[in-house]
Structures are given as C-alpha cells and as structure tokens.
Length: 85
Image (tube, rainbow, N blue to C red; front, side, top):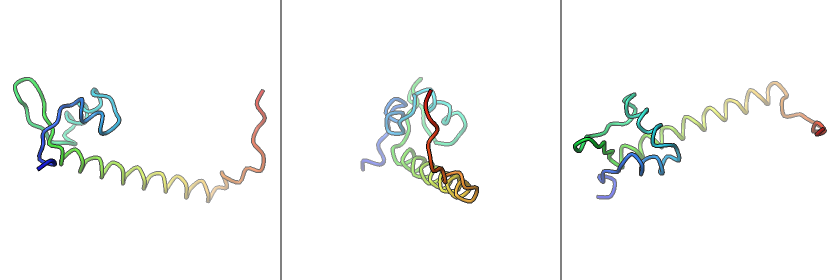
C-alpha cells in the first residue's frame, strides 16, 4: 500500500513544506517515528501524514483562538488603515 511506503527526509520536508533540517529536528524530538537504512533515516508515509494532520488541526485551533481573542479585544475594528510614509 502507498501509505506503508517509506520516504526520505527530503520527501517528508517537501510534503510538510518545511526544511529537511526541521524534519530531522522533529525526528530527533520523537514526534515522528522512523527507521534507519544504513546511515539514512526513512519515514513511513502514513506516520508522516498522521503527524501532518495533527499539526494542521493544532494550527487551526490556535488560529481560531487568536481570532477569538482579537475579536473580543476589538483588534479588527479598524476603520482606517494607517497611512504609509
């Protein structure tokens, strides 16, 4: 199956739209499981997609909370934008 496919760090970075270095960081933090193939790390596509789904949900919840707080504090009630110098 496609979701059982192993992918490289570079491929994972492309899917997540982040740098390969950031993928290595989240692997080191244990946020995504991986296996090694010699000196190379491989990530199961299904594990990466699970991480991406959880990350996207957390981002959406955070954005909704920021929007709610902004609305409560009247931060979007700007009648006129500041003039540029």
